Length: 401
Image 1 (tube, rainbow, N blue to C red):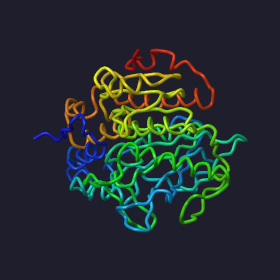
Image 2: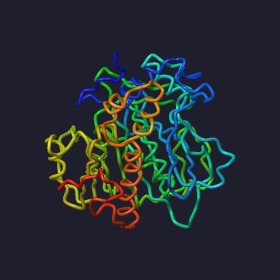
Image 3: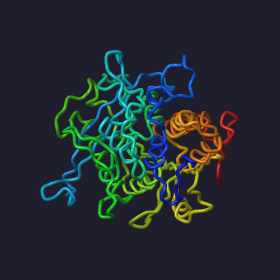
Image 4: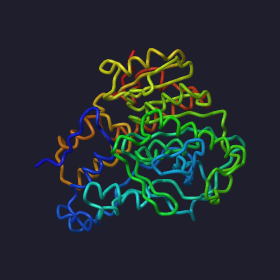
């Protein structure tokens, strides 16, 4: 019986793929897999690659409430409630603990859906040190906001997020309530709803991003937007630059990024990671600010929505595709699934059925290099040559006309 999940083209979610893979790990693998060398150490947790930037990374969670949007699901008197996480270049990180990939309660729920909550201890750690002071260099930090995909979570692109932070960005990830796994400060665990009534359209995600930009402006002005008034890391207030803001997202989050960029001129550059561009409400108007598409499954050649969006881009634009990539290739999957495959004893073909034929190490380097180059060029005016055309360092990346 195969352990590889079947995921339809229109119904792919990051949670379902990782959850299905982890669910198939035998419980014995948690304590010490039978296939391993008896002298080898037990597998204790999955690992994420270390970011390549010169700065250590700090992180802090924010509990946010958008009082302009009533929450009918939560009931009268309730408003749209979100968790967000800020990642930033830090200093003096040694005495601050590193953050998990997901909060423990959210990860427990994530794995419980797959039937294996005991595997929580395999959850990876990040490079982010919780509450570490912000590294100040005399200039404010450019900001990028991130939107996750359907039924996923705000940590699902930690490789990219902590990479940007290590190079001097403040990256803010958003947990889109009712379409995510997250944990609130009072211990409540949020899970995706499946009744079709929740505010989980790309336009809802885009509204979340725009609200988070309001919170970025508050932080830039020296105000704490956290509704619980929790203490923020030293140096965070006043450290963000609201005039240099970008946005990116994966899958539905990529579509939401496009929607938000079209609607909000505060976003100076947008990046979609294989977004299907199925917009609701329909696409209207042109975009004259820089936008980049990293395509895999939802290509302009196969998807009219992606082609239509591309035709509305009037400014700097770029569309690249990594050969052998599948929908989940531009994210943490490429770092995590090869480790899961070893735990499960998958064949090479089984692993390729999940993450495609793109070499995983190359995939990680692509997702570290290309978003950084894009935001460097358009938020920092640091123009390199990576976005000019094919690079021998990344032979799988093709530039689509």
